[in-house]
Image (cartoon, rainbow, N blue to C red; front, top):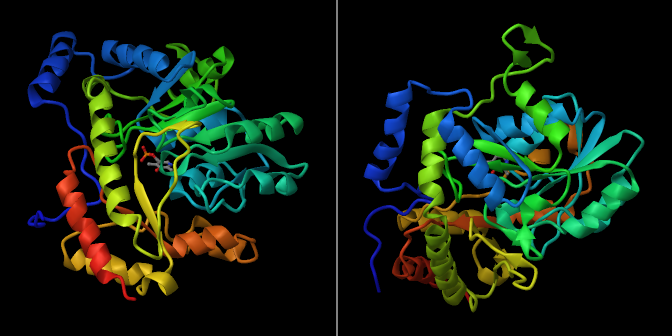
Length: 374
Ligand SMILES: *Cc1c(COP(=O)(O)O)cnc(C)c1O
């Protein structure tokens, strides 16, 4: 059994070989072109349009501003139905645009929005459904799409976790009205900080391009309200370098995830996610477990502490639930979210990153096994 010597954090950013990045940014010194749709930006944009199987990719400085630019460009208003089981960015992007987030409960199978509970939340004010492919696990896209069509509202996705994920044989980005991706340092694919909106509508692309650059259409014309959400050339360079290693990186995550499956599946009270491989080609972005304290003998918070004592730093993603965090709690105390509340209290995401050795994973599993109380 391998011993855990140095601390194991929940994630570790993927970096390309140093020399490859240096070579890539060399072109920036030659051109003196640091940002504003430079050559590297254009190159990454083209590559991602192919990779994500959609017509248009709008690159942004980070995932949150990509979502913000998307919400503004679609002119969403009133209410948007979404999930509280997400990172706060999803919900703030709505609130900051004067839209009321309406929270729908999640499913206990994959923690995504419960498509069977969405329709009862639709009102005359609803302008969109915002699904989150949480942990990279795709929502029931087909069902959500038919609901959105029936009610003439938009369907967009926070696909921050879902880079490289396929649903029914196609990229998740090829579905719905648009998908936002985050390329933050902690995500499966990173551009240091960064993000994008992937979609298929030319008008929307032009509008997002305008809004992400202050609404300036040409040097003498400012035709819309906008902000600065542009991706710079250093970010694009990192993306181009990291993209080459994406397959290897996902394969490495898969090995670690399989080692977790093997080490944890027999421990009572530890619930693992089952990936339906007929529908989903997964990217192994996260490894969430849900702890039933009655069966396991320890609560999530107790296990979290035990792991930390053993230099294993898991994270309580996603706790608190956004509907129950300090900022939003008052407005949502009556929301019916039994499954989301159950899961948020019991979920723990274990360390998972490219290069995490299966032997270390086995050691982590042994700690979890040893805490089990019969
Ligand atoms: C990371 C993340 C974001 C925000 O992306 P940034 O690139 O950090 O701005 C949005 N939604 C979810 C679910 C995320 O995990």
